[in-house]
Length: 252
Image (cartoon, rainbow, N blue to C red; front, top):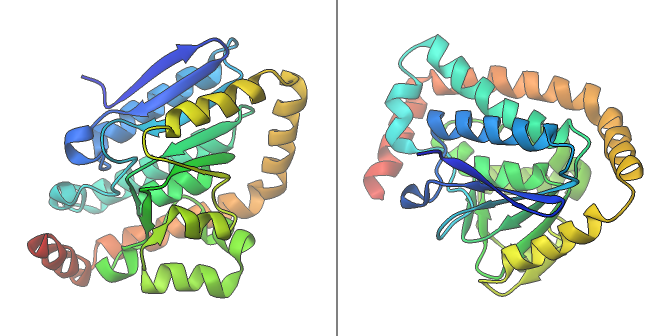
């Protein structure tokens, strides 16, 4: 069974996180399968736009805490896990195909970061997003230390990270982080409609637009990814992180 599957409709490919029994929580296997799926659709010359969504009740509930001990058993395992998370950001952003997120339920931690890596976002009205990393003694990834302050400003970005308060789809829309808010059940349909419109544009012009924007970001974003990786590896290795994650898991 693959934890990321692809569905094709004309010139639009939909990449679906496929671990619904765990709310598409991030595991090593999910990261590997998602990377393979994104490499495939990025290489598909018949695909002009990508929809990115999750199966079941959530888009992505963030790191799977049941894998925390496995992820942190050695420096090598920590670094490997973080590198695979960062690779998904590169797959989403450093290509010429526009990515439309169809996000519902929960988009937490890494799921929130992947939302911010999309070019357009359709959110369902039941969406809940937040960053739990500061509470857990961990660190954000996905290039968001570069992307989020550019979008919402320094103070608002710090508020989102430091307080970790839950954000609704409407709140994210008011911040300019999502493009559309629709009723639950229509999020994929609406994202496909947008993706189909985008796919009908000039492939050359759309691809060049995304690549030029990415080039403007690439040096700073690449540096941010490197710094985030170092901070995340260090955070995972601290006894405080293990204690905080265990305490959170026990409350759940």
